[in-house]
Length: 374
Image 1 (cartoon, rainbow, N blue to C red):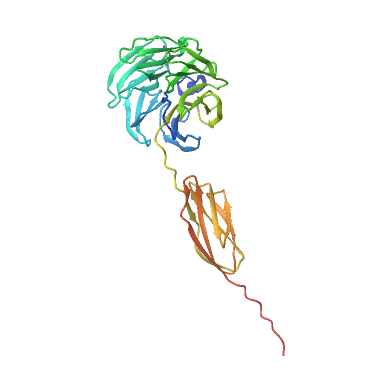
Image 2: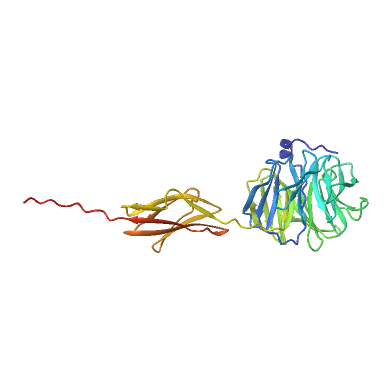
C-alpha cells in the first residue's frame, strides 16, 4: 500500500492514474486535468483552447471521466469525487467522499468504479446517487492506479507489481489473463475492437493487447515522456506526457500525428473525450471614441477592442486594411475628400462580427487668400 503524497511530491514522481473514455466517440472536444493548477482544461480536437479553467478549484485532480450526462473528477488530495454538468457547472461536490487517494474512474453505465492508489481498492458506487454498492469490490496489497470497464470486466493497473489484472465487475474476483510484461503501468483504454492500450510510465511507451490480454505490440508507441492518461479522439489516440507537460496525438497504427497537440500544461495527468461540441464564440468589436467625425487630414487612425477574434478589418471606398493585434487594435484608414463610410468588423473561428459604421467627413483645406496692393 502506498500513500498519496502532497501535490509537490506528486509532481516529481508522477504518481497518477487517469480515467479514460473508450474510443468510438466522434469527439469535438477533450478534457485534461492538471495536478499543478488544480484545473480541468477543455480543448477542441485540433488542440485549440476552449477554456483553460473549464473546472477549477480542485485538489490534485487525477482522473476525469465523461458519461452521457455528467463529468466526474477525482480529487486525489481530498479523497473525493466531484460531479459536474457537461457545461462544467457543479452538479454535486463532493459526489463521493471518504476515499483514500482516488486516481482512476470508469463506468458501466449504471455504476461508477473508483480506483484508489493509497488504499489499493476499487470501489463500486451508484452512478446516479453516489451511494456505495460495494466500497471494497477489489482489494489488493499494493496500489491500484487506474481502472477501465470493457466487456463486463474491469481492467486495473497495479504499478507496484508491474501488471494489469482483470476483475469481475460484480464479484471483484480476478478473471482471465494478466498482463505482466510492464514496468510502470498507468492508464488503460480500449478501442471498438476490444483491444487494450496501456501507458507504461517507466518505459515511456504505450503497449497494445488483444481482448484476451495477448500482446499485439509492446512498443505500439515509444519515446513518450512520462506517459499517463489515454483517450481516443475520434480514431486517434491522445497520450498525456506528464514530464513534458503536453498531449501528443497518434494515429490508429501508433504513428505520431502531432507531437504537441497541447503543450505548456502544469503537470497534466488525466484526459477524456467530451462528446458535446462547444459552440464557437461569435467575434465582437468596439470602436473607441466617436463614430461621426470631421477632419481635414488625409487619413485617420481608429482604435478599439475586440473579443473572440483573430483579426480586425476596416473597409472604406473599396479598400481594406487589417490588423491581427485585436485587443486593443489600431487601424490607419486613408480618406477621400468629402464623406467616408468605414465599416469595421472582427473575424475569428466563430465567424464575423456585426460591422460598426464610422463616418468621417474630410473637409477641404481653405486656400490662403492673397492680398494685393492698389
